[in-house]
Image (cartoon, rainbow, N blue to C red; front, side, top):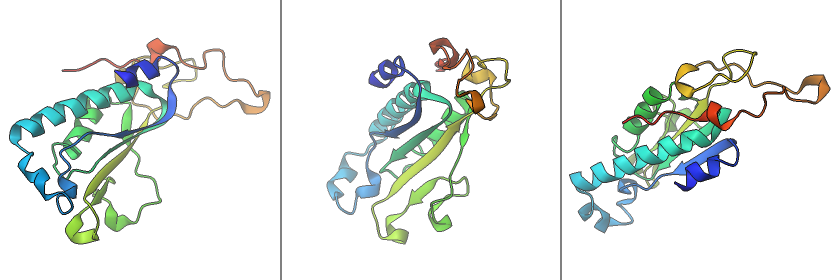
Length: 178
């Protein structure tokens, strides 16, 4: 709710969602956490993560980034959440960046730290980028209709943005899927 309320102010360049999770990546330091992890708690936290991601999407401007992170190693909390987001909001795509050593990345380009392999707590992070405008004529409309990654309008030599910049609240709102 707070993310959605903050999105009313303006879309932002980047959102970091350090999502609540079961914390299975920290079991070495918190062995008691394994007794709190049940199928029901996994289902509940996955639903909460999905809702938080849907709210965070609304705050990201075209061309901006959404970073989703957990300290969990459960696929339902990590890869499945990102896949679900990419299906629900096709204007987003993975954008791994170049500053992470390849041995820390999944084949999809997400960060995955494994305690047994990297000597750290387990963690997951995915960097996602929202596409730009579909045409130079104006805002693309709802996220679901604009998977394009065209560059954002540039102020150019005039130093002024186009008259339709920044986008209206309506142009960044995404439908909430079930």
